[in-house]
Image 1: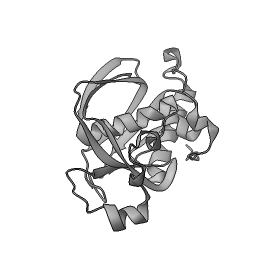
Image 2: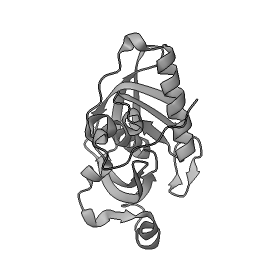
Image 3: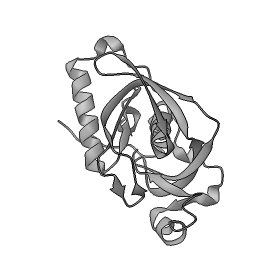
Length: 190
Protein backbone atom coordinates (compact mmCIF):
# COMPACT_ATOMS: atom_id res chain seq x y z
CA UNK A 1 0.00 0.00 0.00
CA UNK A 2 1.33 3.45 0.93
CA UNK A 3 3.62 5.02 3.50
CA UNK A 4 1.84 8.20 4.49
CA UNK A 5 3.36 11.44 5.73
CA UNK A 6 3.26 11.89 9.50
CA UNK A 7 2.11 15.42 10.24
CA UNK A 8 4.08 17.35 12.83
CA UNK A 9 3.40 19.61 15.79
CA UNK A 10 2.06 22.88 14.47
CA UNK A 11 -0.27 21.23 11.96
CA UNK A 12 -3.72 22.28 13.18
CA UNK A 13 -5.31 18.87 12.55
CA UNK A 14 -3.17 17.30 15.30
CA UNK A 15 -5.19 19.39 17.76
CA UNK A 16 -8.64 18.37 16.53
CA UNK A 17 -10.42 15.55 18.41
CA UNK A 18 -10.95 12.57 16.12
CA UNK A 19 -14.40 11.24 15.21
CA UNK A 20 -15.50 7.75 16.27
CA UNK A 21 -14.94 5.17 13.55
CA UNK A 22 -18.29 3.86 12.25
CA UNK A 23 -18.47 0.13 13.12
CA UNK A 24 -20.51 -0.53 9.98
CA UNK A 25 -17.42 0.39 7.91
CA UNK A 26 -15.23 -2.31 9.44
CA UNK A 27 -14.14 -4.80 6.82
CA UNK A 28 -14.48 -2.30 3.99
CA UNK A 29 -11.73 -1.88 1.43
CA UNK A 30 -11.14 1.68 2.70
CA UNK A 31 -10.72 0.43 6.29
CA UNK A 32 -8.30 -2.33 5.23
CA UNK A 33 -6.27 0.12 3.16
CA UNK A 34 -6.08 2.61 6.04
CA UNK A 35 -4.87 -0.05 8.50
CA UNK A 36 -2.29 -1.34 6.01
CA UNK A 37 -1.07 2.20 5.35
CA UNK A 38 -0.84 2.89 9.09
CA UNK A 39 1.23 -0.26 9.67
CA UNK A 40 3.56 0.52 6.76
CA UNK A 41 3.92 4.11 7.95
CA UNK A 42 4.65 2.93 11.50
CA UNK A 43 7.42 0.66 10.22
CA UNK A 44 8.85 3.23 7.80
CA UNK A 45 9.11 5.86 10.55
CA UNK A 46 10.50 3.39 13.11
CA UNK A 47 7.73 3.86 15.66
CA UNK A 48 5.89 1.52 17.99
CA UNK A 49 2.47 3.15 17.71
CA UNK A 50 0.59 5.43 15.37
CA UNK A 51 -2.75 7.20 15.63
CA UNK A 52 -4.79 7.96 12.52
CA UNK A 53 -4.74 11.73 13.23
CA UNK A 54 -0.95 11.61 12.84
CA UNK A 55 -1.42 10.82 9.16
CA UNK A 56 -4.13 13.48 8.92
CA UNK A 57 -7.06 11.07 9.19
CA UNK A 58 -9.45 12.33 11.85
CA UNK A 59 -10.72 8.93 13.02
CA UNK A 60 -10.33 7.13 16.36
CA UNK A 61 -7.98 4.36 15.18
CA UNK A 62 -4.58 3.45 16.62
CA UNK A 63 -2.11 0.74 15.67
CA UNK A 64 0.56 -0.52 18.08
CA UNK A 65 3.31 -3.03 17.42
CA UNK A 66 6.44 -3.52 19.49
CA UNK A 67 8.65 -6.04 17.70
CA UNK A 68 12.16 -5.16 18.83
CA UNK A 69 12.02 -5.43 22.61
CA UNK A 70 15.61 -4.26 23.09
CA UNK A 71 15.85 -0.63 22.07
CA UNK A 72 17.99 2.38 22.76
CA UNK A 73 15.48 3.12 25.53
CA UNK A 74 15.93 -0.22 27.27
CA UNK A 75 13.81 -3.34 27.30
CA UNK A 76 10.24 -2.93 26.09
CA UNK A 77 7.51 -5.56 26.38
CA UNK A 78 6.86 -7.32 23.03
CA UNK A 79 3.40 -6.43 21.76
CA UNK A 80 2.09 -8.00 18.54
CA UNK A 81 0.44 -5.80 15.93
CA UNK A 82 -3.05 -4.76 16.99
CA UNK A 83 -5.62 -2.25 15.79
CA UNK A 84 -7.55 -0.30 18.44
CA UNK A 85 -10.79 1.23 17.22
CA UNK A 86 -12.66 3.81 19.33
CA UNK A 87 -10.55 2.99 22.42
CA UNK A 88 -11.36 4.13 25.94
CA UNK A 89 -8.85 4.13 28.81
CA UNK A 90 -9.80 3.63 32.45
CA UNK A 91 -7.08 4.05 35.10
CA UNK A 92 -7.31 1.15 37.56
CA UNK A 93 -4.90 2.50 40.20
CA UNK A 94 -3.79 5.96 41.30
CA UNK A 95 -0.08 5.12 41.05
CA UNK A 96 1.80 7.10 38.40
CA UNK A 97 5.31 6.83 37.04
CA UNK A 98 7.27 8.81 34.52
CA UNK A 99 8.98 7.88 31.28
CA UNK A 100 10.86 9.83 28.66
CA UNK A 101 8.55 10.00 25.67
CA UNK A 102 9.21 10.85 22.06
CA UNK A 103 6.76 11.26 19.21
CA UNK A 104 6.81 10.89 15.45
CA UNK A 105 4.79 14.13 15.31
CA UNK A 106 7.34 15.94 17.49
CA UNK A 107 10.55 14.67 15.86
CA UNK A 108 13.93 15.08 17.47
CA UNK A 109 12.60 15.84 20.95
CA UNK A 110 11.86 13.96 24.16
CA UNK A 111 10.04 14.87 27.34
CA UNK A 112 9.48 13.34 30.76
CA UNK A 113 5.79 12.58 31.36
CA UNK A 114 4.08 10.97 34.37
CA UNK A 115 1.02 8.81 33.72
CA UNK A 116 -1.09 6.16 35.47
CA UNK A 117 0.67 2.80 35.43
CA UNK A 118 -2.25 0.35 35.57
CA UNK A 119 -5.03 0.88 33.06
CA UNK A 120 -7.80 -0.95 31.25
CA UNK A 121 -8.29 -0.40 27.53
CA UNK A 122 -11.72 -1.07 26.03
CA UNK A 123 -11.86 -1.05 22.25
CA UNK A 124 -13.39 -2.48 19.13
CA UNK A 125 -11.38 -4.98 17.06
CA UNK A 126 -11.29 -4.95 13.24
CA UNK A 127 -13.69 -7.92 13.41
CA UNK A 128 -16.22 -5.75 15.26
CA UNK A 129 -15.73 -7.42 18.64
CA UNK A 130 -15.65 -5.52 21.93
CA UNK A 131 -12.40 -6.27 23.74
CA UNK A 132 -10.76 -5.24 27.04
CA UNK A 133 -7.15 -5.59 28.10
CA UNK A 134 -5.12 -4.38 31.07
CA UNK A 135 -1.72 -2.77 30.72
CA UNK A 136 0.98 -1.92 33.26
CA UNK A 137 4.13 0.18 33.27
CA UNK A 138 5.64 1.34 30.01
CA UNK A 139 2.97 -0.38 27.91
CA UNK A 140 0.29 1.58 29.81
CA UNK A 141 2.23 4.72 28.92
CA UNK A 142 2.33 3.74 25.23
CA UNK A 143 -1.45 3.32 25.13
CA UNK A 144 -2.06 6.65 26.85
CA UNK A 145 0.40 8.47 24.60
CA UNK A 146 -1.18 7.08 21.43
CA UNK A 147 -4.77 7.54 22.52
CA UNK A 148 -4.05 11.14 23.52
CA UNK A 149 -3.67 11.85 19.79
CA UNK A 150 -7.33 10.91 19.35
CA UNK A 151 -8.26 13.83 21.61
CA UNK A 152 -5.89 16.35 20.00
CA UNK A 153 -3.35 16.07 22.82
CA UNK A 154 0.43 15.76 22.45
CA UNK A 155 2.80 14.41 25.11
CA UNK A 156 4.30 17.87 25.49
CA UNK A 157 0.94 19.02 26.90
CA UNK A 158 1.43 16.59 29.80
CA UNK A 159 4.96 17.59 30.80
CA UNK A 160 4.85 19.06 34.33
CA UNK A 161 8.44 20.33 34.41
CA UNK A 162 9.34 21.97 31.09
CA UNK A 163 13.04 21.72 31.96
CA UNK A 164 12.51 18.02 31.12
CA UNK A 165 11.70 18.73 27.46
CA UNK A 166 14.84 18.25 25.44
CA UNK A 167 16.29 17.48 22.05
CA UNK A 168 17.27 13.82 21.59
CA UNK A 169 21.00 14.66 21.47
CA UNK A 170 20.79 16.57 24.75
CA UNK A 171 18.73 13.76 26.25
CA UNK A 172 21.54 11.33 25.44
CA UNK A 173 24.17 13.70 26.79
CA UNK A 174 22.50 15.03 29.92
CA UNK A 175 19.49 12.90 30.90
CA UNK A 176 19.87 9.29 29.73
CA UNK A 177 21.90 8.21 32.76
CA UNK A 178 19.81 10.01 35.39
CA UNK A 179 18.36 7.69 38.04
CA UNK A 180 16.62 5.10 35.84
CA UNK A 181 14.12 4.48 38.63
CA UNK A 182 12.73 7.99 38.28
CA UNK A 183 13.28 8.93 34.66
CA UNK A 184 13.34 5.84 32.44
CA UNK A 185 12.08 4.46 29.21
CA UNK A 186 10.78 6.37 26.24
CA UNK A 187 7.87 6.17 23.94
CA UNK A 188 9.26 6.29 20.43
CA UNK A 189 5.91 5.35 19.05
CA UNK A 190 3.89 8.19 17.73
